[in-house]
Each structure stands twice: as structure tokens, then as C-alpha cells.
Image (cartoon, rainbow, N blue to C red; front, side):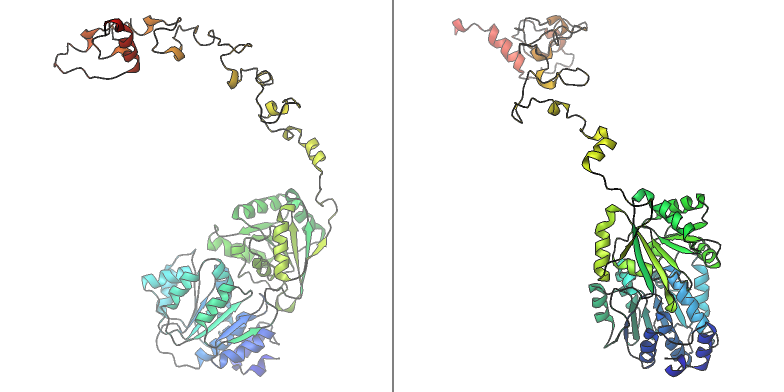
Length: 525
């Protein structure tokens, strides 16, 4: 179907033709008439099927027909990322350049003051990310009381990023009577629940099976060791002569590391992720669009909003944690009816994630082989030969040298200590000789003449050296007879003859009690 058959204004038709579109896509063919009739819409379509124009064109037409007086916006579009907000804002500006309608983009990562100035001047459409829009609402720099159209673009991604509370808080600022449009590439329980709460008798539009990729995208994978991924990627870019490739990784650090590695191999590349400033991300994206960069490394957060109509290759360097994100990643290629390729590099530790992705797609992904990059499967014997030090865990020499006739778990005193690596005495036989008798030379005959700790406080031990405690150089009394007057060795001068005449504290020590019992004559009792 052609756009002329949809009942659009001539100004909008000129803008569409100016962007090179002549025929509408299936999502546009069904959504535009429904929005023009004032119906709520629940649209399910993959990325790159033209759903931005499916809601932008009818909203612009309905706002243009109204005689607007106030400066407050009439349409609000919520997106999960800054890049997608910029893309949607540019689409509204391009389509409505002949209608004298203003569009203001609102997102974080940049100075908020220019956005405040733009909102004060007045606008018709606001395209925003939830976080920055809440900042404006808290500062009262925006008024949403006149909103007539609410659009949730990439709603599934916003829920995955935890924006559900922000979305509900923003909806509380909107009037109850409005037209709601919700678009999502994948469906989940949360999306169904949100659509049930938000939409009123919506028109359900599905132009493709749920959680499926576009048919014009050729998908295949390579099984490769994790350490060889970057070498295989560089090999494919050079050998296949990929002019532009978008590479998805899991972490920000991984994006920076891979960018440096590709630069060293002569492949101009740049990375975009959440830690990059908005200006740096825009510069990298613009350089990639101009052809100055051959590879653009991105995380899932930056995946939405990368709009490149001629992008031919997308590489999943790391598999996504959420299987549905795979559909969004490969949706960056094969846009506007053009063909594209989605290549996935799978290491052995990612097989479980691959199975979950194939379960979402409901079909297996074709496997390709790359010469000299196939993963090597080693047997246990080969692993021991490569890592001989790991055949025995350290500290198990005692167990390995246990006699085969000895039952497991039994303690053999004669074998303990003989297999220790540094010939130190074993903890079980410490202080005993070969006959199992007590070896007093280890503890009593110390080089510093200190008393045996096992006979501490005992006067009946033969090796007891009483000089170490009773005959102290500072004439202090023996602590074992402290505070007792009936002990013969008691020196009362230290405590009983105090200057403040305080009584001697009575403490019952076991050593003093034994001394009293020995000094008492039981025959006299």
C-alpha cells in the first residue's frame, strides 16, 4: 500500500517522499489508520520495520489540525535510551518540518539548562527518557496537563531497565483522557500487564510472530574459544571485507578493551556505553555513520536508537544475558526491507545462553566453521599433561601417601609427618618421640630458660624453676598466692601495708588453694 492511500496531509507525504519512502510497511499500513481514528494501539513489530513513522505521522497530522494556544506539549513519547530519543526526535522534526511544529528532546547525560530554555519557549511534542523527564517534573520546568497522546516506544526495553516505577509516576502527571500507543518488539508478562492497565480496548497489531527476528536477516554462528574471539572477529572483518560492523559486548570494560585490540590490528573502531558522555556517544555514532569508523563496539544499553539503514553486519561478541535482547541486537541490520547478516561468536561456556536464545526464536541458528579457530576439546588425560601441577591439590600429600591397606579416615601415627614437604613435625605428634613418650626437651629446655607452659603454676613439677615467678627482680609477689596471708611464701609488704589502708581483694586462685591444702596438717583436724 502507498502512503497516498492512508489519508495523510500533503505536507507529510512530501516529507515521506523526501526521505526516500514510497510504500508503507505492514506496521504502518495497520497502525496509521487506527491512530487517525483515535484508537489505542498495541503494536508488535521487530526493530527496523518503520514503527516510528507509524505513530509519528498520524500524531503530527492530528496536532496540526488543532488550534493550539498554550505552550504546553500535546504529545509525549517515552524511550529507554538517549540514542533512541534522538532518533525519534529527528523523525518528528523531519516529518513535520513543513507543518511548523516543534519537537523537544529531553534526556540525561547533557546540560539540563538548554532543555529548560526549549521547554519555556514552547513545543508540541516531547521525546524523553524517563529519568530526565522526572527531573523536569520535580523542578516544575514542564507541564504535562495538556498531553493528548502518550507513546511508549520499545516498552519491553524500558521494563528490562527498571523504568516501570518511573513510567507509572510520569503517568500520574498526565490527564486521564488521552490516546495511548504502546510498541514493543518482544512480549512478556510485564508487557501484557502494563498494556492491560494502560490501554483502553486497543487495536492489536502484530506483523510478525512474537519474539522473532526479521526474515531478511541471515543468522549464523561460530563456535570458538573465548581467547580466540577477538582474533576471529578481526579475521572476519578483514577477510570478508566488512565495510561497517556493529559489535555487541556484555560489559563496558569489555567494550573499551575490544576497541583497543581492534585499533592495534588496524581496524578503526570506537566504543559507546553508559559511562561515555552523551557528546562522546554522539560523536562516535556520527563518525560511524560517515564511514570514518569500521567497527562500532556497543553494549545493550546503547543498542536501542542506533539507526543505520545501510548497516550490513551485526556481531554478537558476547551473548546477551536476556534472550530477548538478541532480537533487538540483530534488529540493527536488515532495516527498511534490506538484507543483513547477524553473526554470533559462541564460546563453550555460553552454550546454555545459546539454547535459551534458540528457544525464544523457536529455531536453531546455523553453525559455520572458521579454519584454525575451532574450539579444541581436550580429554582429561590431555588436560593433566598440559597442567601437571593441577593433578594434585596442594596439601594432599598426606592423603596421597596413605597406605593402600589402611582404611580411609584412620590415623596412622607412624606415617604422619614423614611425607611433609619441609620435614616439620606433624601437629598430631608434636612433643612426642618415636616411642610415643613425652619429649620434654622440646618445651622445658628452652634456650631462653622459660618455664614449661604445661606446668605453669605447679610446684610439684620436677623441672619447675620457681625463680622465674617468686623471686622476681622487682620483688613482686607470686601471682598464684596473691592476697592470701596463710601461704608461707607470701610477701605481705607489697599489698597489705598500703598507704590508703584499702583492704586486700580476696581472690580464689586454684594455685593458691592447692598451696593451702598442702600446708594444712590433716592429722590435727
